[in-house]
Length: 177
Image 1 (cartoon, rainbow, N blue to C red):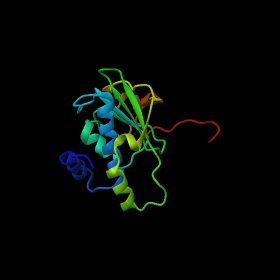
Image 2: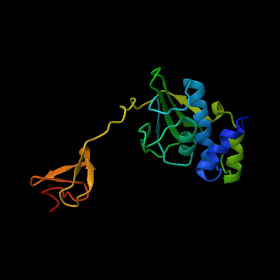
Image 3: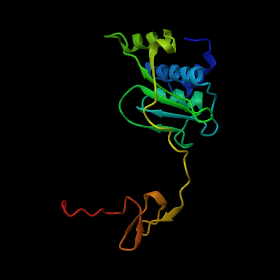
Image 4: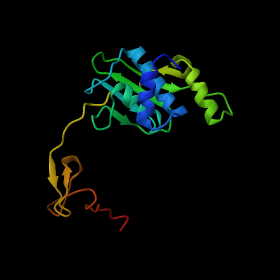
């Protein structure tokens, strides 16, 4: 492990426990800082597109300030331990793909292995394959004329002249009647 025990502890507290996956995200975030000159993002300057929704994402949230609610943590689910990081200020980006670990490790052995690795030993550094996502926008909201719940404009459908949310809207398909 590196000398930043306080930051590691903060990640562990947020996640709820320590595990190999948290270590992967922790090391990915630190490596992204090193490669792209990132700092904690209180806005959308730093963006992470994660290809998984596993434990490591929690460390990325804590260290880089990427979050779903802020719109700078996005998921492109591919089941890979891969993270694309973007620096909106410089325009630089990097995709970090976890290298395979030695075979037949227990969870505890994997934890110790990743704790002992330097980030450059853990990840392949690649070019990003996904274009930098647009900054998030705030949508107008409308009341669904069926259930009465407020819904963002992008998720409203018009049916027989009524604004309906996706839960109330019934799509029309002549082949699946």
